[in-house]
Image (cartoon, rainbow, N blue to C red; front, side):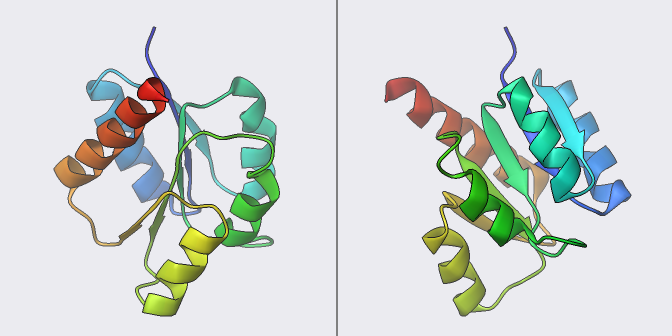
Length: 122
């Protein structure tokens, strides 16, 4: 059974790029264009979440903090926010990794695979 990745981002181009890339690499992909939609998709029990920070209504950090007690799957922030304070804040609210845009797809895939391997060992 394919591992499930929930991608949460308000940029459609990013969602479609990541959806196609991870689907091509044999992952099941769930998408959400905002935090409200992502909350609904949590019931599908993703194995990993790729999460943008800057989104309308509620941002990714608030969402991460809110769901951290509901899921222990890895959460990787994928964001344009590059300041050290943002990275530290993302990690302190429960993020497991922090990747800034623009990003390399192969590196992102490698990090996703590493986090999922680690989860299997736990």
